[in-house]
Length: 425
Image (tube, rainbow, N blue to C red):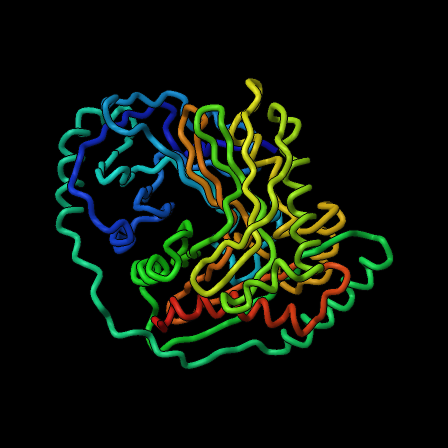
């Protein structure tokens, strides 16, 4: 199956942009348009899309249809950008939690807010038959953004319910089963995820949650995907791949501790083994698409507020016959969110995890027509549905893993998201 362009969208589009005063990008999520997507990078660069001039779904095999027939009337402004959120497993049937949000997709936004290097633009993309109205609608849209209210310091939501059910016991049992399979030689690693469901006395505001995530995790990419009245959002520490010109950068990120226990990561044979598995898998995945790979660097500690990880950066030059989406296909899913070998790990996690993953641990991306782009792995997130939220998290299981320790790791990850939802410092 290839990316399919919905017949609901026109074949010819016109697009124009106007420079506007920068504003906190989270504020745009106060507007009611659906679908909505946000990709907010560390340092202030941001892309927020509202509505869809085109919407593609499928396995992101070929995106030529996304850009075909788009006439850009503002060549001096940043080019149109597509934003997307894709599921961990294509073709998976969503449960009640993910219904509406899944299968996600890649949109060419109707309205796109772009913030780069301290400057900002509003880009509007419409059917070509509406080209005459483009200047007026662009001016009206810019005025509407300027009039957006500030993100108020609203009363913080009060936690009224935290429900894990029997998930902790089932999770520990699943870890035991996974270790048994690993010791039997069936696979090297599997990542097992579970959910935490919480309820609040008032609905958390997505814009406010994203702002708090920025304060807590300034080095993370914040993301959001909204549809059918639900929002999947978070702040991920894991970059899948970034392409600038022919240069690509990716990373291996595995192992988690609280900051005060960060030194344990380098001292732990289990954590070093898990990280080495991820490094080798990433290098093997991109090897056919790049020129010679330099030897891997030794892992270092990467500190994000609330968590510490083992981190190894990986850089290379992309071959002329490869492109950004080929990199995404090659790298997803990473061993850090699935396991190794990938096919065996995916089969086992599907058997041991009681619910579908949906958009959790899937790619979130921005990309331009020239092939440049950035994809991250959707971790440290929550599904917001009115007063309710569900927070998924996973841990890597290898030989030597302990069920209670892995359960504690998932709770540590969930706690960082829960604190942002309810405003804990």
